[in-house]
Image 1 (cartoon, one colour):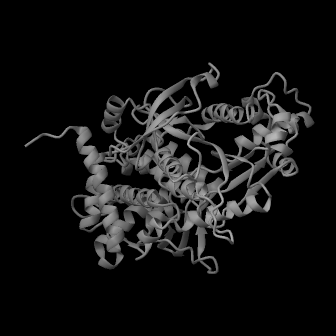
Image 2 (image 1 turned 180 degrees about the vertical axis):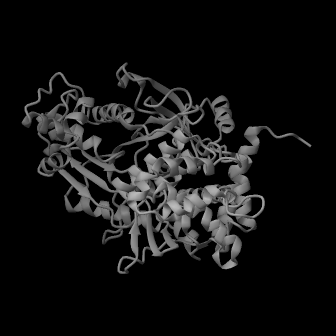
Length: 564
């Protein structure tokens, strides 16, 4: 029998996770404690993603991975016994409470104390993401459960103390905090310092964002849920999939309505014949680059010796004023109405006061006034959702009365995102020359209109192929190292290949010209093969601001400095 390499084992595990999830969606339900759930757990353990750290060590609880997952799931997920995944947002006129995870845009409703409903509006990537997180939580909850009783079947001292601490008054909790953290560290198998650090992390998010329960409560509920499950079949966690979930995802139900709403706004403003430049990015850096200089001047700042990076710090508390000023000079916001979680912005460049633009960008207003370019900024998509949104956005308008499709005058498509880097460090910039889908031979090569010469020497820039992965929480260092060696990959992300698939198909169909300018630039949010630099570790923070604005500046220069 052929012995598989670690990379081959991991790739098989990724394929298994995807295949099992697809099958379960068709089946309609599964129990993490059942055969299918155990198969998911086994596949995730074989894969052993970097982001989940010590998940495979039965002696300790993986707390950094837990931080990552809890930030991306709704409050109370750790105690749920019933989770429904559906495609219809039929809860707007109900009393069900809408929940918002801290670091992942999701549509979730709390149906009962231990029941939640997820509206899958962002495609298959969202489905895989949710199932992966649920599987990780189940694995860790099972490990917590083993700490409840000793070898003789008696409740352990540590668990008894945890249960008592949770029922203390607030005054008693403050008085006995360090003792409780020490006790919790024994349950987790973690050093006191690490446990205290995670406790503080949970408390910050609980107090500032109300996005999670107390760390003590979270661990307690994780163990208690498995305990209840062992004692009664009626307490099993069950995940349900609505019957039409997969069909609706394939039909691009949400993306079509989203794109139609944007096109209607373009017609309403009379911009349909103008040169259109599409940018997928955040919703702050473009508007700041084009309008914040005016606010800086009004505050008395001398902008001539400042770079684009300085504008963030001068104006980070002025976003409301910047948008109010921008709204009077060609800026329009289009809020999402269809649960895609993707807001958009339209900017009529001909209405901008040249003095409001970052002084590092030199534009010819005579040329601008002649061509009258329009910029459409769409917020970050999530995984496969990128194909659905971009395909519908690039398609002609078929809704006219004479049924003749109307094409928009699309001149450039720019994608700015964050990605894991394989050749550098957090905060570096990556310029893609091709996108390769992980686990397949599907690849898209293109001419990137951005080069390293478009960036200052103060930031490291890497150029090469970028891998489009199934999920950031499914990454294994052996697979990544193999991809780096075979494809010469510089990084990995979740959307680029999906965007390029939509762009290439639009060219083939004749929806957009073959010479449309394509730009891809990513800033490194993490290095998944370096210890201490995964997404589960410290957030990128200010390290991400600098490359974000450098990329923004490069894209805006390309669009405005030679629009003719």
